[in-house]
Image (cartoon, rainbow, N blue to C red; front, side, top):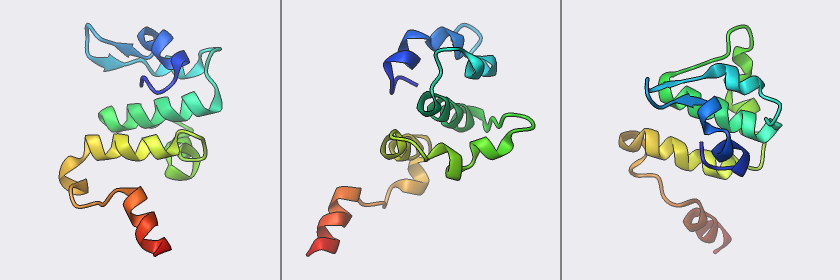
Length: 100
């Protein structure tokens, strides 16, 4: 959730550190952009499977990855699920292999 300055500056409107839980109402804050909202939705989903009730489609990869933060989202997924991602080669490594 520290990917963008807006998110870092407003982290307390997104997460309750004392009680260790997310604050979904922070998704509607005026500072949110389409990219930061996608980042927040992904972070919430990775934290506890959160999906916005009535707007579940916004938590799908189709919507979440349609922003400039997408390359970083993959890193977040690898951090959250290391056991499933341990054998995934680096994307730059794959690109070099394809080019050769």
